[in-house]
View 1 (cartoon, rainbow, N blue to C red):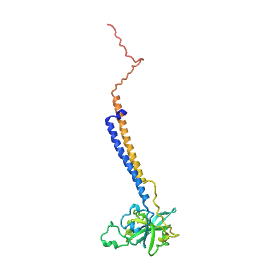
View 2: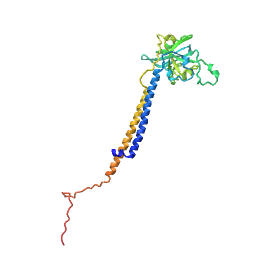
View 3: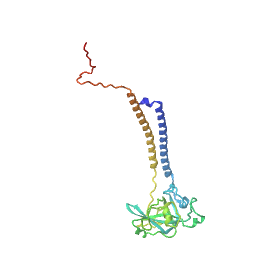
View 4: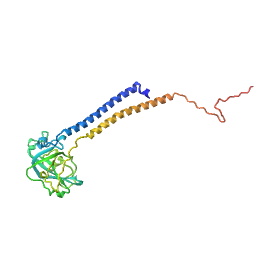
Amino acid sequence: MLRLALTPRWLSFLALVLVLASIFVGLSMWQVDRAQHKNDVLTAQDVETMQPFTDVLDAQVPMPQRLVDQRVSLTGSYLADAQVLVTDRIYEGETGFWVVTMFEVAGAQLGDEAQLRSPDEATAKPIAVPVVRGWVPDAASAAQSPAPTGDIDMEARLGPVEGPVQASDLPAGQVRSVSTAQLVNLFDVYTYSGIVFPEAAAMSGAGDGMPLVDLEAQEEGGLDWQSAIYALEWIFFAGFAFYIWLQLLRDAYREQQEQESGGTTEYVIVKQAGQKDLHTPHTHTQDA
């Protein structure tokens, strides 16, 4: 088989496989570098430094991923009537509700990319951000912890919004996710593509019956596992290319062997009945 592999045809095939494998390995290394680079960005960003909320995020525009877990300070007031309970939220192993209340932000502004039908719409509605004020075990408990009134100076962390989930079967005032796309339909406000998690109970009205909800900090170190898995897949493709070449070579070698053995003539000698030895029988003739 080695002799067949060294023929020009199979060496050409091998060269093509080497090119493909090199490309696959290169893509794998790119995924590894991307995974590490993404981790470096998350590690390098200083989310612990307090930033003014209105400096880092505008309303009605997407929130950059780098702002997740960012500490922010903001001033404003709660819109007490703009509140929902988010179902199926776990706190210390118990299922209950998040109490989410819209918070009108002082000095808020719409982003340049915000789509408005006319300039007058920019001031037609209040600009508010969803605030996760706390967790309650049941819907009735939420009424016992109303939102603070008046102007509030808040320190909090930014979290990402969630996708909309159908909630028409739930009681009024309850939703299944903190989706700003749904909140703007429930309340006549402009809003942000982020969620605010207060750092102190005094800022949210939390207490014994409604504990605060802490935004889980992003983990530092390690790799971006999605990119790492893609890197392993490219290595698999590189190995599979060599496997296919080897299988095709083996098939060609077997076919060659069969063709070579097919040119040999085989004879089968059959003994006659009663014949003991495999020799040509003699024919006896009588003289006339």
